[in-house]
Length: 149
Image (cartoon, rainbow, N blue to C red; front, side, top):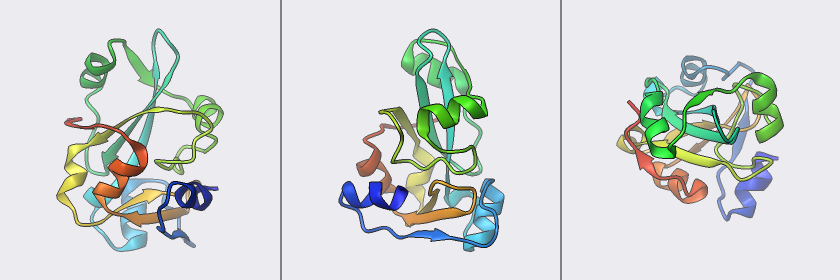
């Protein structure tokens, strides 16, 4: 599904199914042999008033400052539970990719990801990933690059 979404967007990145879990940033970094900071982790939030999904793609080492996101979207947010994540993206927590969601989702990209030549993102399951460049991430998602810390 993610491979098809990448192809439809004109990208040739290759989804890799691994034997080990990539559910957390630390797991993913260990599995692919990169730094935790190079993992593009997808964190889905829920708009407190609109109930809309908001996806923050953060460097694996960073925590999202929810107040910054709330200011950007002009509403309070809360973490999305597992059911909301699956219903709105089509994927499970630990496998949410930056593309291929069930609906159009507002996306924000952590500026710290731009510090790396290559990064890794989830590819639909808790043991699938793909390698990409930060500029590819921006192009494929259309998300603005912001400070999330």
